[in-house]
Length: 295
Figure 1: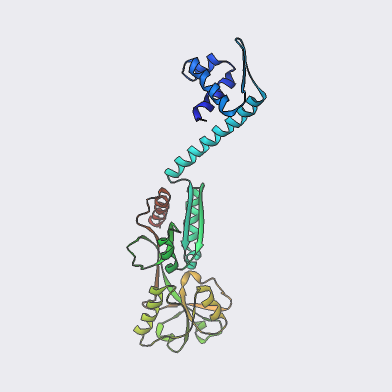
Figure 2: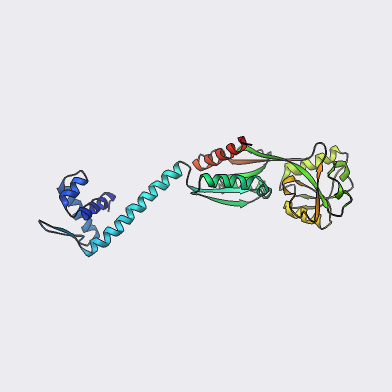
């Protein structure tokens, strides 16, 4: 069965006249009649009752007309969807993101993108930067919110956010009444830090800042999530260094203190495979770039 046969049948069924249908289709009547006969043979049913003066739909023809119209409408929708996908305004985009991105940049970007491209299905997966790198290699994600620097020739990056870190101490800690501390003030403290494998560059920066203050940090506990580190600080097990954007977590149980001088800093970028030419990926990058330029 060919698409043109369905279109021919609909024209005849609506006109109930082969001559008018042929004129509407800009063709002659004999080949139109032949196509309808071939369609009926393929279906094994009579769709039209014909006489010299009259054309009428059979019961089978009435049902087929309804379904044929629906099929053509679905096809038009499919064509329109394919065109929107080609233009990068419809489809499915899989995002990976580090948990701390959800405190600030991620909601802003996702909201802006969804407002501009409401027909794109965004699928989000929380995962640390190293896990995202592996996901990119398997082509499991299209875009990643990662902590940089990352050295990987497979990927391209666009910096999107930078923030300083703050110290977090238990609410009853002697330093809790301060608004600002130096790294040296933390010399005797036990640290609760994110595992180095989760965020190598940040972990190394914190340790380097401790060394600059002439001490090596005592790491009592390594954790996989920033939220966990703050919870353990709230329990009185030590202090931590966290992104300033997390300062609303456990705010009643801990104190967040600015760090004087050259405080540890975190950088976030969006990442994508350099060889990914998807229009959706390009649209997402453009939205992020516009938001960054509007700051």
